[in-house]
Length: 64
Image (cartoon, rainbow, N blue to C red; front, side, top):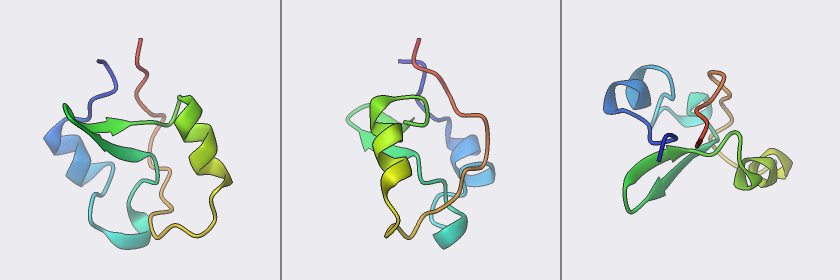
């Protein structure tokens, strides 16, 4: 699974736990935190407007 986010990236780039600046594409799976930016779920997230996390902090990780 290539879209697993490394711990260091979660804090520095994704800004996990930092309110509005936190990336809106972070999801939690049984394997850890994943980036859903380039997935079907990511497109659904784009349609949401009532989320606290609103960040779009990088180009995203792709699950290839």
